[in-house]
Image (cartoon, rainbow, N blue to C red):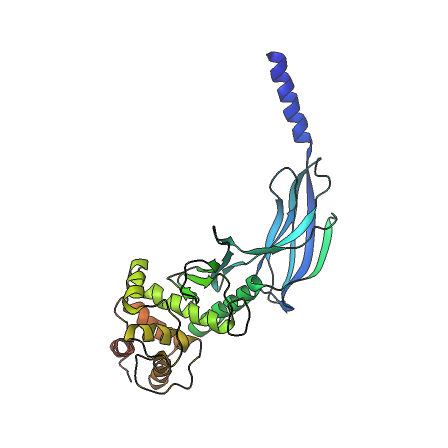
Length: 318
C-alpha cells in the first residue's frame, strides 16, 4: 500500500511537471462589416486538447476598434505549444451601461465570434479581424443607442440590457420587456437584413425604459394582456390609448412617425408627434421626459395621462 501511495504521489508530481505556463501579447483591430467595433470585449485564448481553453487575458477595444491584450496561459505537453486565437464576446459594461447580445435557441448565452488559431509567438499581431453577421451588427447598433441615451439624458440605463437574437416566443416582430429585447428567430428587418437595425434598437430600447419605470414584470405582463402589445403596428394604425402610448413613446425616441399630425391619441404616430410638441412647448429635456415616467410608475397608459403628469411635475402641458 505504501508503495502504491508513493507511486501515486510521484505520478502527481510528474503530471504537474507536464504543465507549462506561456506568456503572450496580442494586438489587432476588430471590424464589423468593415466598420471599427468600439468597446467590444476581446479575449486572447489558447486552444487546448484535454481541457477547457485557457484565457491569456481579456480587454476591450478602444473607440476605433484597436486592442492589445496580454497574459499567461497554462498548457500541457500533449497539446504542444499554445494555439492562440482571438474571441470577441458581444458584451459591454462601462460608462454607458451594460449590454449583452445573446444567441442560442435552447439556452441563450453571450454571443461571440472567434478567429482561426495562429502559430504561437510571445508577440502576436492579428491585424484587422472583420466579422459580418447579425451579432456584431446588432451589438454596434445597440451600443450606439446606449451612447445616444447617455448623451441626451446624462444618465445610464437603469438596468442591464440584454438582446436575445433567437427568441422562439414572439409575435412575429421584436418586442421588449423590462430588460430584454427579444428578436424572433429568422427575423428580417426593413432593410432586408437579419440584424436589429439602429432605428429598431432605439425603438425597442425606449420600450425597456418605459416598461422598467412603469412597474414590475408582473405589471408589464398585465399591460401586455390589457393593451395587446404583441402585434405588428405602424404610425397610422388606430388601436387603443394604452397601445398607442406605448408605441408612440418608442417612435418618439426613435425619431419616427414625423408626418403624423392628428390628435387622435389611439394612433401611435400622433402620440409621437404630441410628445415632441410637448417637449418643445415646455422647453423640456430628454431627461425630464424620462423623469415623468420614473416619477409616476404604473399610472401612465395614455398620452392624456402623460400630459397631465408632466403638468403635475413641471407645470406645463399641451
